[in-house]
Length: 390
Ligand code: ACO
Image (cartoon, rainbow, N blue to C red):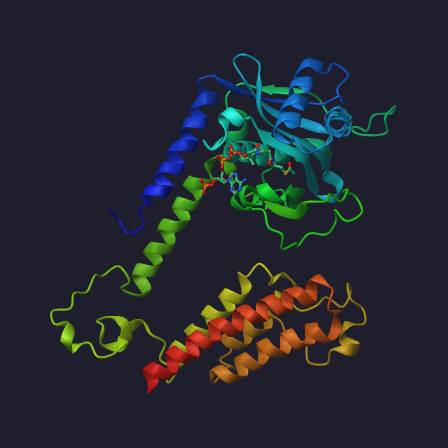
């Protein structure tokens, strides 16, 4: 087995998904989009969709579900089997001008759950809304309803969703929903997070008790039905690059365990540990810490300097601004002779945020999360540095 091979659990998940994909290829399942916005709508299918949601979301008022499914501003993407039964569905409302779609309800029929159907349905849904967003830009507003009149659609097989959508589209697209607290684990697995970065939904979406607002960014660069291939390719590239920079894949044997007195005696450990006295290693460590900060979900307010056009009084209050791109430039110019000035810059960036923003703001919370994460990482590395340089 290669080092970047898939684990048994991942293989099983992939097989479950492939089986669901095959059900579409064999025409056992098909995708339909149905809405009362289309004057030739399919009421029977809408009634079946309503029944699915009423059955699977039994705590929701039945009339409320009925109204949402038949609302002309809403669309329903449903999975239909050969007997024309609705086995899964998503009721959603597009807000394409604001760059997002709200999931109103989502459910898979009890008999089809826990087989990967919910996951594949979300992949299809993401691909579907991408295509709808592209279509939307070319649509005319209905003169009577004053809204875009969406059309019913039917897809045999998954071919329609397997190509890349919206070539070159730059506009971000998000999905937002109030996830039932029992289903939050499912949404997390589909890329949703309660760490909100997107705010254009505020004032447009109704608040639900017993739910948590979650969001998911939909990436144009990924075809979600092929995401495992995509991730596999990236994974392979990362492991190959790692082989070039260190020997992580080399298995070293210890002939005599009695010679191992401390961690550094384990063959290979010293060669991959940060050596602070060496400039190259210090820069690598800082570079790693900057990348780690950048990839943190709470890092988005700190990626670039604050734009004075967007926050006109910022630089009146903050006299020593700092952000992650500035730290990266300082690193490239060799302006961190030791780890301390770098740590000071991270703290300065966070303190600026605490000083300018109120405690209840997303920015303040992001700064706190970023700092907590950084402190724990730093503690680990300082400990390693001290250990190996002593
Ligand atoms: N809690 C935690 N994890 C879950 C849950 C859950 N309730 N449901 C599924 N998962 C996980 C699975 O373990 C799986 O993880 P894995 O990829 O590591 O194996 C992953 O999510 C995908 O599971 P699927 O088998 O694809 O999901 P399934 O077909 O069972 O559908 C769904 C999930 C849609 C939540 C289904 O259980 C359902 O219809 N439930 C009842 C209705 C409901 O709660 N809908 C959401 C309400 S919130 C709203 O509508 C906005």
